[in-house]
Amino acid sequence: MRHLIETSDLSTDEIERILHKATQFLPMLDSTTLDSSKRPAQSLAHTNIITIFFENSTRTLSSFECAVKNLGGSITRLDVSRSSTSKGETISDTAANLNAMSPHAIIIRHQSSGAPVHLTKSVSCPIINGGDGAHAHPTQALLDLLTLRQCLGQNLAGKRIGIIGDIKTSRVANSNIELLSRYGAELVLIAPPHFLPPHSKLAYTHDITEVIDSLHAIISLRTQTERHSKQNYGSLRDYANQFCLTKQLIGDRDIVIMHPGPVHHNIDIEDELLKDSRCKVLQQVRNGVAVRMAVLEFFILETKA
Ligand code: NCD
View 1 (cartoon, rainbow, N blue to C red):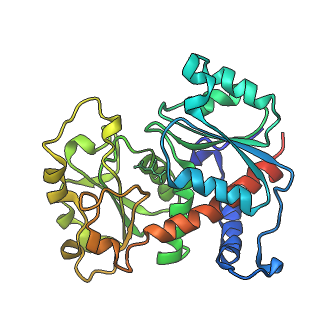
View 2 (cartoon, rainbow, N blue to C red):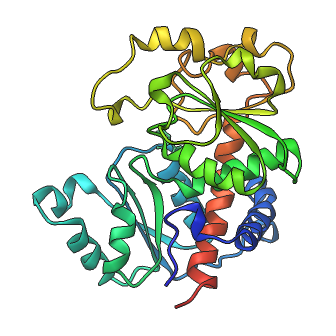
């Protein structure tokens, strides 16, 4: 049984297949007509997919739910606040019980790194990681890869991509670093010292103005205060003075601006820049649905045993 815990669970060939499928799904998502030929095939008809999100989510949960429904599958959302985990049941027990209901996949988000891989031992269906602690967020990295290719061309080799913000506690950064490095992108981390991962071999700077002229794209990340054991910076305002992406900073440079959301307005990205056509945040969200449709088809229909 295959699971999607981190991007390295997929070979580059498999990623190509998933992104190709996602690209085929995209025009179908635009269809506002009732013409059934323009709608995605009902390939997940008669399947039941369980979502169990122990952390808040706006985009990822609804994106997976749209993806399942677009393919004709049905979703059972486990309401964690009402589940027995809040009565002391371990998540392995919860997973074993959910598994006994014979779902075709379980999509999990958890505040602890390693929770999804732990669950793989208690189930007989694919586990799809919707984000675990500061560890990994594979479907976000896949949708970011698709968005970058749409904007910069298929071949990312040699493209300079900045990742700016709270990189140390970001599962999005971790997954993007693995995936984008594999595709030959030149990554540069931009952050104050306390937000940089300690043992990274990647290029880094504390001053975005040093590298901005060389960048083709910048992925901005939220300051994940919920994952900090103590506040190790002055204030978010001080941080924003140096690391917020603004129209003035970007100027007329041809740089793709991305963010996984939720955006801290005027801390991560200035409101004016969010409205700029170089900012691809909503394109990322749209791509997310298509990528998750392709991921679900791949793990539920194509990979067996
Ligand atoms: C991110 C997450 O939850 O990992 N958002 C997302 O899934 N789109 C990033 C974040 O919370 O900052």
